[in-house]
Amino acid sequence: MKIIDIQAAGLRGATPEGGWANEIKPDDCVHTLIAVFTDEGVIGWGSSFTNDRLVQASLEILEPLCIGENALEPERVGEKLHAHTFWLGRGGALTHTISGIDIAMWDILGKVTGQPVGRLLGGRYRDRVRPYASLLMQEPARLSEHLHSIRAQGFQAFKIGWGPFGRSSNTVDEQIVRAAREAVGPQSTLMVDAGASDAFWHQDYKWAARTAEMLAGYGVYWFEEPLAPDNLRDYLLLRKNSPVPIAGGEVLTRRQSFLPWLQRGAFDIVQPDVTKVGGISEERRIAWMAEENGVRFIPHGWNTALGLAADLHLASASKHTDMVEYLTGSPFIDEIVETKWELDASGMLPIPERPGLGISLDLDAVEKYTGKRFRLP
Image (tube, rainbow, N blue to C red; front, top):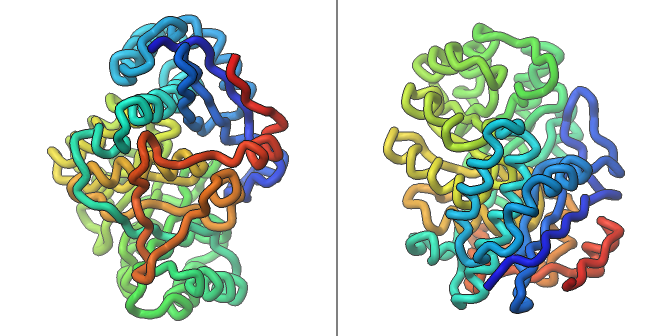
């Protein structure tokens, strides 16, 4: 089965706020869908955390390397693409685009073999996983109201991030966390994401250490991205001294970039994004490295329904991955699938059992948000 075409289209019109200093707008594109077509009519779907113009430019380089390749060999083809981009900016838009191609190829492999991707990754440790609702911080009263509405949907784990946290005062920081804890209740799992990969993040190690102490008093499960993402030295120091687990890694790409962070013990929890790092093939290798170095692997999932599906399968095949991120309120998660995501009575999300990624896209909704009708060449 040969690859004959690769198409891409950016999602626009309902892009959720990211909390960034240079805030993204609904018509901005930060997520791009990728479809890989085969000579036998099987189509695989993937997603890339990159603007569609960057993906299209990357495909001009990558697609000639894919055409005619065996569509059932995602890891080998992925390694070929990585090897041919040493000199062209690997780790950026090219690697993000490889991610979408790789996810789509795993989808094809599952569809052809009749197996869910998680089983093809070596076997399923679980058939459901706890999703944590991921939402932006707001001033305390509005955040509390939002969390109450999300909790009413059945979520039992919550992550609040970005917004005014770390950008106003220590008093405001604590007011936000106190309001969140009161809203979700003492039994719910609560995580806090400082969002220090924001442009020109100004807080330092001392702020992070002091804030970690405050978060411990509210039973926060982990403290995410408390320091600028290149500051390995301070991450090592913070993880050693923090009373709450330290999480990060969402902006890193390629397994080689994760190696020093894992080997030196910078994280308690590592959070690669499957739509950035090189896809499922690369992310499962990062998960293996994490396990070998005593670090928990919990995917970063601020992306699309295809990214969420990939995360679910990775979680099913990873021994200690019992949570996935669920970006709440995004049509790119909730509306572009034919069968809507549903939590069970325990607040758990079933892992798809159908072949491939196990989800079907609503192509009318895809066309609504991309302006493109994907067609077999």
